[in-house]
Amino acid sequence: MMAEDESAFRVSLDRVEEGLAVLLLREDESIRLTLPRSLLPPGAREGDILEVAFRRDVAETEAARRRVAERIERLRKRSAE
Image 1 (cartoon, one colour):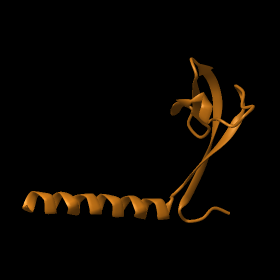
Image 2: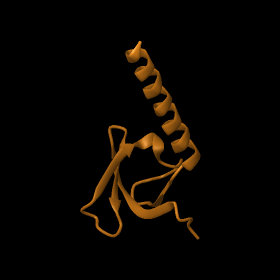
Image 3: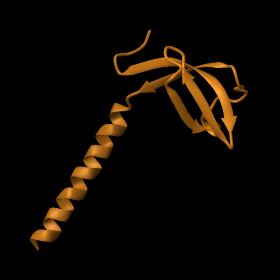
């Protein structure tokens, strides 16, 4: 069972060209994704069906927002001087 902040879908590994993997969305093979071969699981071969999952990293997102807010605050203080 997937959490609320996750989504997943299946793709087929169509081919690998010059280090890039071409993936076709199973529900609509007119939709293609291209990504570096190195991101595929070890042993993945043309014709394999792969599951792709996205998960929100809430903690990392919040940390990134804090860093941006701190930078903006430093820039505002610097420009006020």
